Amino acid sequence: MAEAVKKRSEIPAGDRWAVEDLFENDAAWEQALEEASGEVEKAAGYKGRLGESAALLREYLDFEDALDRQVNLVYMYAHLNMDTDTTDTAGQASYMKAQMLASKMEEAVAFSLPEIMEIPAEVLAQYRAAEPGLKVYDRYFTLMEREREHTRSREVEELLASASEMAQSPSNTFTMLNNADLKFDRITGEDGTETEVTLGRFGGLMESRDRRVRREAFQSIYREYGQFANTIAANFTANIRRAVFYAKARGYASTRAMYLAPANVPEAVYDNLIQVVHEGLPAMYRYVALRKKMLGVEELHMYDVYVPIIPEYQMTVSFEEAKTTILEALKPMGAEYLEALEEGFKNRWIDACENVGKRSGAYCSGGTVSHPFVLMTYKDKLDDMFTLVHEMGHAMHNYFSNKTQPHQTAGYKIFVAEVASTCNEILLTRYLLERTQDKVQKAYIINHFLDEVKGTLFRQTMFAEFEMLAHRMFEQGEALTAERLNQVYLELNQKYFGPDMVSDPEIRLEWARIPHFYTPFYVYQYATGIAAAAALSTRILEMGAPGVEDYMKFLTGGGSQDPIDLLKLAGVDMSRKEPVEAAIKLFEKMLGDLEELLA
Image (cartoon, rainbow, N blue to C red; front, side, top):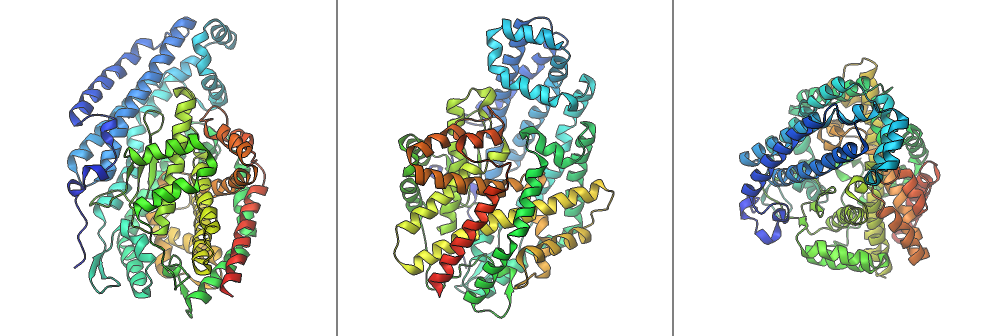
């Protein structure tokens, strides 16, 4: 029998992330929760008074800023503990308390933005000129003016804020269903022993050299999602309904317009991405044809997408080896970057072990209130090393933004969130390719890179197109049944993978297991991110110190400017089609290199 998945309590403390850096223990957290709740109550004392004087306006903004830090610290501790063991009822209760606190804060301060907007423009200008302490809020005032037409009266803003906790229900429901309740069939592994299929193990199983294992794992996963397809479709629709409600309440033309507005990203960027990727699909079809040829199969199925196509070589990388390799690969980034990276490796910023109830996938959390925390499940695969370098790219972005920017402008927009992480991946790929003369190993690494671009540029654009279509269908009054969503997804899968791929019936359910769909219009940024990252990594390697200097302007910029402007400082203009076109050309070049190696 295969070794059972460990309980969280069985994971050594040294192998867990250091949540005690936030609070020493649960008792300290409870005290902070109570204190933060008391601070929230103080917001009411400012209501109706923000226009009285420049000094009072500054006092309130400082209060809200400090409250935001306090509440986010409490929330972060709870969500980190929840995500490492979603089956722990005490952790679930703490997370719910933290959510309630966050919602309570949002409701308590909801009056402030409309009230500040009611201050006459000339008076507000006088306040800002007279009170030096308001200088740190310049960006806040700029964004406030931008949001003016979408901000409602104090009463309506308070009502919208009070509904925020309820509005998280679809996402919370999916999290619990996906991570705690769904149970998948056991299958016989490559070694002939029975193994439990979990979301954490699914990626590794899909890379198995044994096609039967891949097929049975694939069928096990989607058999379970299929049993709950109607429920998941209703929950997914509820999340879209929530988005539509807020878009209408705030006067946006669509949900997409609302979600792109905070970062000031033109909708044309989204449309350009889909258009350019559609134009580049022949390169994807060429990749699929090569995969079919190298696997030697009469039919290429969706469960054949992730297994490496270099059968003679298997690259295993331990967690410690991965950290050493990453430090070497990122040396072009300079000493300051490497010192911060090593600090994260040594001081338990990372939670990499699998345990029962642990949230699937990988992420970096930290925001603007602490050092970053990285969650993943490391399985000694090359892909895991790339996941680690990816998430540490997020961590370095957080770290340097927090180090350089004040709290008010440290948080960066989601649009640039995937740039630093993907830039790290490309630097690691180029490092590995330069360090080997072994044709098989080189082909293996190129194959991995192509798989990453396939998954990040092509697949995430497919997700983005599905999400756009689903929201548009709902906004036009169409019912989003499981059958209809399955149909739309299957048609897109056929379009993106082309004629040499068998789109198995199970793949129509893939939309049902994507957590990111509960953060609407997020996934397209993976694709734009890899386009920007490809350009930036080239500048770093070709220009040396000047390229790094430009890159650090972006990395330390936080939210001090619009993300497109920050990327322009680093040398990339994402308002144009060229970065996406260049990424596809890089994919084609690497594909050509692989075809030559395999000839």
